Length: 138
Image (cartoon, rainbow, N blue to C red; front, side, top):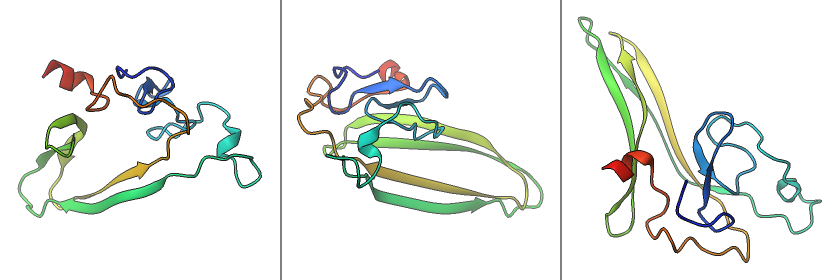
């Protein structure tokens, strides 16, 4: 969990389904896509005072392939987040595996920006944002 107070911008919690660290404000887990709670303000145009939907700020898609016909290769997918000063906020291994000769794997990375609820205090206690357990050990 982050050092931010519950209810503040950037506060996190653990998804009860997949155990991923997610934003405390999320009503749907972005990892497993299970619904976490009913959120009428996210419903639609009929909901009064609805929070604007997030927008995809960045999306990268691609494929990797192993053209060798003689040996397999292993891979490790790592995502690193840095602030404007280049300081590491988080570094997470999101997947590992192997690719057989002639096999191809597709990858997609997206970053969604979600407007914060008005009046929510900012997460000043954690100026670099939430950190993963691996970063705290590093």
